Image (cartoon, rainbow over all chains, first blue to last red; front, side, top):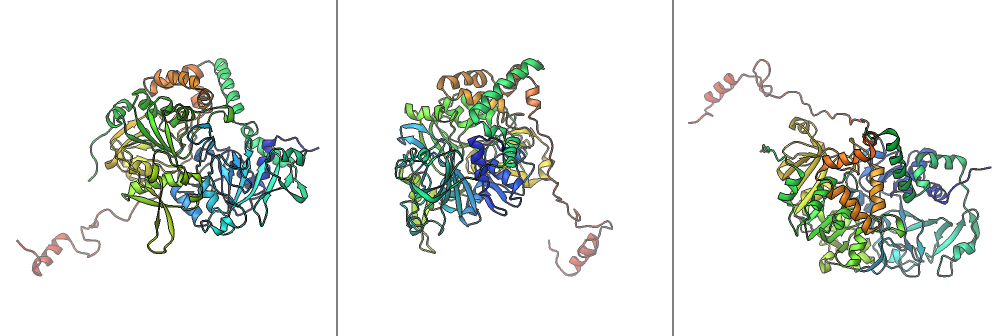
Amino acid sequence: MANKYTLDELLIITASREIHDGDRVILGVGLPTTAGAMAKALHAPNAILMMESGIIDFTPVVPPNHIADANSCRGFSYATDLFSMFTMTYRGFVDVCFLGVAQIDRFGNINTTVIGDYLKPKTRLPGAGGAPDFMSYAKNTVLTMRGGEFVEKLDYFTSPGYLEGGDSRDASGLFPKGSGPKMLLTTKGVFHFDEHTKELCLAKLHPGVTTDMVRKDVPWNLKIADPLAQTEPPSDVEIDFVRGFAPTESVGRKLMYQLGVENAFKKAAEKGKG
Amino acid sequence: MADTISKVMTAREAVSRYVHDGDHLVIGNYTVGTCAELVFEVARQQKKGLTLYSQSGIFDVEVLVGAGCVDKLMSTYVYRAGGKEGGSSVERAINAGTLVMEDYTNFQYNARLTAGMHGFSFMQVLEGPIVTDLYKKRSFMGEDKYKMITCPYTGKQILTVPAANPDVCIVHVQRSDKFGNAQYWGALGSVAAAALASKRIIVSCEEIVDHEIIRSSPHHTIIPSFRVDAVVEIPWGAHPTEVLGYYNLDRTAYGLFFISDMTADGLKNWMDEWVYGCPDRRSYLDHYVSLLGAHALDVIRAEPYYSAPANYGSAYSSCWDNENKCRTMGITREELEKIMQERGLLHG
């Protein structure tokens, strides 16, 4: 019997499979960097991993703490600055980028800035970061959502998906033709975008999830692919990689810090303060 | 002309001399190697009414906003401790009406400093975000947050942002000489642009090194001495964040901050203990070691992984060879002067 996996692990593994050998990939912190490390180790050894801080062609040996973490790799091939990283994307040299989502609408437009009113926020989220520019100019964008929500109307429109749907993105003349989000990965399934309407469409269900469980999260009549596929379950090799490489990614940041602080004080008590 | 005046001073002196109430202050570091001790010192000196620029407002911005130093925040990204149920001092201050924030994208924020660094009045940025609320919703920058222009060559509509020239930059680097030739390597981010756009620059560093070390590795120098006002040597000056080649992020110390920052009271207690309770970095480290042991610092010290030296050598360092002959013309200085005399080239 295959090993059991957490939903975070499944998400990382599913994201990792979207990286192909030779791809030039922009990785955000957390899930994407672990997905990138796994791709390099297991199926895409020639992928070129990049972070927007200007760290290019790196192979992480531990999960990066953030997108400027050169301590997570032993050297890298090209040290450039943030400005050049984005102009490189603008010129079309980035194949795929991974972005996290707090709110997403029917056409893959994204909010990562605020829940509630912009000036009196219910929840102030991290913000734009590099997302709007990457989502504008990377050839493909893979969106990941953990704990976010599907909404009819975004509280704040941070990053452009397919705008009003149909050909509105291409017709705007602002973006490279054919660019835009390629898929959305959540803890329940994999969504694609309809070729013509550019609407989100459920393409794969994760093992053990039903369409009803997905529909109840979505405030519109969700399109469902026919036939609907099931996400390939993670292999033992993949699960073993994630847990070995990034045990902290399997548990989430809050629990990571709680356990870390507890055990550091315990260790100090045992060892003495010297 | 080379700088010959030492600018070495303490963090207290540097901040007291070069950071003023009401300044536009930019944190030069981007996520990594935060100038933590300089940030703490600004908080300790209770500077007021700052407009704070931060490429990625995490730990550092949380502390300065939590300390009540900041009226306006210019950033692209803010910290949130503890996910949905958690919080941040930025969120609390916005809701209390004591802070206003202007949101840009990473590139746009960097572009404002890059324009300022080069002396331009604006910078072209990527046009995609025109369709988003970044463009439509404007805070204290108002009309001047963005403007559109027509490219004079292609006729294309171009999105622009105005240049930024902050009053003062605080920045932490790996090493510097005492004159302020500051060397930084790793994730370059927007560190050089933030510093060079600014009118005054305070550099803190892990170590002050001989000028000769700087001369032999100029590709690491991101700020030249003549732009720098103060140099402060602060080992562990970025702790609990990391400095490449020196130490890793301290997950225990960062975790303590993270857990505290979820609530206003938690952050206040943390600040009382770690910022106001420690007059300088030495006492901060003593406090840390008294709680967690010296061992806790030892385990995050970087193992060496040296960059291969780049050979800056050349064939010779004088035009005259061992026989005192000019390497190009093959004659001695006396022979040369004789020829110049003969040909009527000498005057006076």
